[in-house]
Image (cartoon, rainbow, N blue to C red; front, side, top):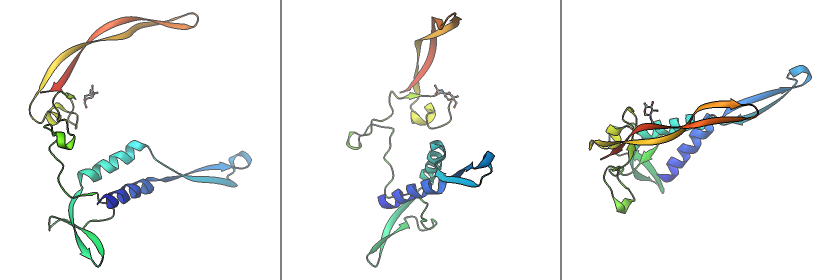
Length: 166
Ligand SMILES: *[C@@H]1O[C@H](CO)[C@@H](O)[C@H](O)[C@H]1NC(C)=O
């Protein structure tokens, strides 16, 4: 399973490589062209891997000759392809602390009340709700340019609402 997932990761990377070229020659006439393979933005690769993670297949293995072949655990699932991430056992419940697994739980974790993603208070606090507190932050403000050559600012205090999981 680890080897399979490692190969998926490498395949995603090499599939995402794109070719970029640069022209040389008289006024860019392209009589000589240099091309190379480049990586796209890391965020694009990460988001590809994340969607594969969310669609990962639970697998078991069977012996084919001396080789182990990965097959889906649920009989009706589609066959495992070379681009599917796979897993053997379900992830633990990360909501509650589990020292044996090194999982700290989500109590006291900062969360985002207006988000609907994985940092939202709904998801992160596992339905336990959250506490709200206000924090005073100091910021530079009313900045002005002073001849020559510096920027002078005042310090302002601002209250921020923060939320942490119960
Ligand atoms: C919280 O989530 C909203 C909506 O996704 C986002 O616009 C905002 O920047 C987030 N706030 C923080 C502190 O991350």
